[in-house]
Image (cartoon, rainbow over the protein chains, first blue to last red):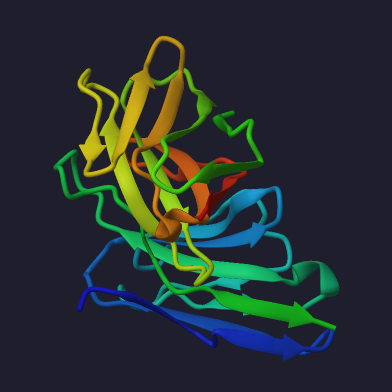
Amino acid sequence: EAQVTQNPRYLITVTGKKLTVTCSQNMNHEYMSWYRQDPGLGLRQIYYSMNVEVTDKGDVPEGYKVSRKEKRNFPLILESPSPNQTSLYFCASRDGQGQSSGANVLTFGAGSRLTVL
Amino acid sequence: AQTVTQSQPEMSVQEAETVTLSCTYDTSENNYYLFWYKQPPSRQMILVIRQEAYKQQNATENRFSVNFQKAAKSFSLKISDSQLGDTAMYFCAFMIYGQNFVFGPGTRLSVLP
């Protein structure tokens, strides 16, 4: 089944304790992205990657890191989490070569609810 | 900057009735895609419908259809014969070809029995 898998789904941690949220896709998509969802703000992009070893900042990158060493994986790293990073996080991927009818649709993971105390 | 506005934070509709969710966007580009995503209580993001800006014909998917007005930069979603399972948060989004998605703040829809 074509899917984006992210883990953990739920996490409660304390301020300053480094954590990593993993994301993996099995669709051979070149583009991957991380979003955070907060009430009234919709989804805001944290980081994205156009291909292996190519990453770039989104709208709210502060406090986050990413890496793209393999095409299928795009982990999100919080080096020193703070309470304002309490949020619902989504990883997503898409194909996006050209303008074919199947391209450019974002496929999302199931979401990771993170609470930082 | 590209922006998406959904002016209705919350809406409700009776089961079997029709409801329209509003979305406007701002871009100076000419080639882009528009989307509606649904997020039920399970939190999963599900694609409802997609429209390519160069196509004049409005997209339809079963009970879901859009009213795409390119000049007005408007992209509303109509849900016909509403069902309890349509209760969800609905996000409007657009994407310029090959670039990033931009999402609106969402409209919470409740379908009432």
